[in-house]
Amino acid sequence: MAYCTYDDVRHIAPLSRDEIDESDLTRIYIPYATSILNAEITLEKEDEKIEYISKEKENDVDGSNTTFYTKIWPIGDTNDDGTIDGSDVYFYELDTDGVRTEFTVSSVTAKIGKFVLATAPTSANEQYISYKYSLIDTYTPHPLVKLACAQLAAALAYSKLEGEDLKNVNILNLRMSFARSYDKYMADYQKTLQKIRRRMVQERKYN
Image (cartoon, rainbow, N blue to C red; front, top):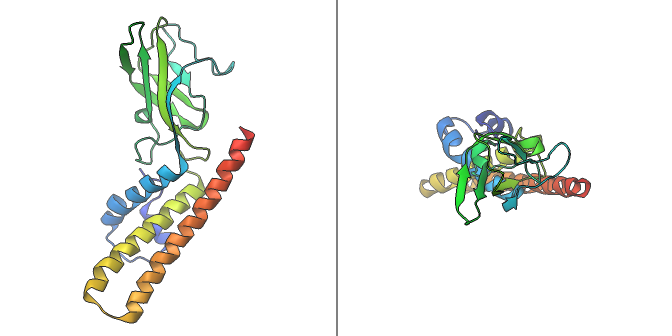
């Protein structure tokens, strides 16, 4: 998955299939736009110790419990694939000698920072997690996130068209048209990104 789809990009940009093949847009430009956007709207949390958070989120390490919670949520996309799942949370424990044991995360509920382990950790050891988080919904994703992804993917696609077509065509109007298209969608992306950041600041105030 990714933060946007081929149809999302085509909805905002008049890119024909003759200009950009659907498979290229889906396989190259949308994933690239997702990874760039993800870097802009997520933050890393490394080696967070598993501790009590609330009555709902007790994080009880008793040798049988497998359900735990992050201290900051929603959980974000760590590997830039546009999907939030077990691969986006790294859980490990250290024994008294400092020997590390890694655990498999079988499921994630990003909205509330919840994740479930395949096996229960040991109560005698200390547990830690590393993950990314975002103060805007990247798991649905939020409409602004989807729009920003589509705008950036469109800009990247027009950048390719400009680079390829203008090598062989020296027509001023064509050059200006492509330049305007790239600039337009990149500017639109930056505006949407600012809206996302303002929303994230507002969310931080209430969390």
